[in-house]
Length: 383
Image (tube, rainbow, N blue to C red; front, side, top):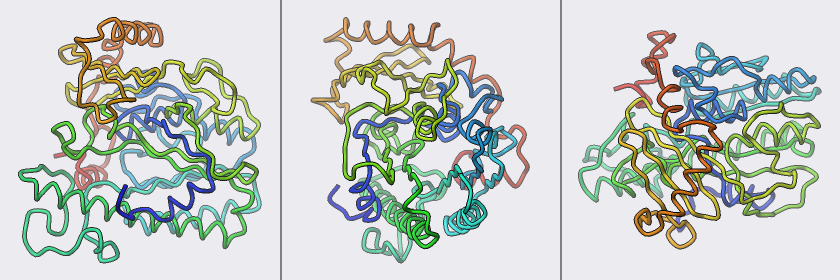
């Protein structure tokens, strides 16, 4: 990327194992986190817009003597929706990321001196994309225009100029989030934790800026599910990169293995440090509160997107077409059929039927307080 948006993350990557082909298990925060926490695809554990009671990574760590804490700066992950399973200390809200960082510092202070598993989730970059003086070199001040100061929780695009402005604001949000991350790393150094702590950086989803005619995250194209995944281990060689495919469900068994634990049988994820066939079919699952429910299967850089509303299929060769501009569904029907057949084998069912069943229920107001609903509205989850 030509702009210097992430100097701290770039420096971190030089010390970490970087997964070049890392994918979210889903395209929205609650579905993606449900999979990451449980090691299972969202249609199995995110039912009726809640994480069902299930064994989680945090729960496994707690049961094996680790102090567990979570700081989650997104009200979608409220305890009322069961996302606090396994965490001894759990803070969730909608705050400036500076407060999330301070809560993380307090949690780390409390955990010092014991084995701990901590998860700190910063909201940046996420709507609303706000103008910040610290990132003015990326998104300079404007006096006029709908998005002079902020996009608000939701936005649309009416011109190329608006698209450029929104992208600038997003780059500014990345720069701000990178600054917060740099402070977290400095905090670990100051506490004497950096040399004996595994640090993992990843994300729950990406964003679209009209690459496929939409904004935000309502589909399953690369810009929405291709995410960062980096692991810095005190005893791991620096600066390595791998083309092994990571999906969000893999975090649970991978972290468990690093801690000397066994993940439960029957989950969908794989331990990334255990030899396995890197070409194995892996799914990403799009579950939203509208009719756009999709499932993705990708192998050897061939990617099939199945849309469930009217049963549509799209096929892309990511090796030659990483931007997914040329749909090959009519040119290579046998490849599409093979990918769909393996999708059915993985789900042991009709994939679209699974998504329809899992999406039953009202979202996302159920079980939440008026204050929490207003926080969701400010982030663009509720109109």
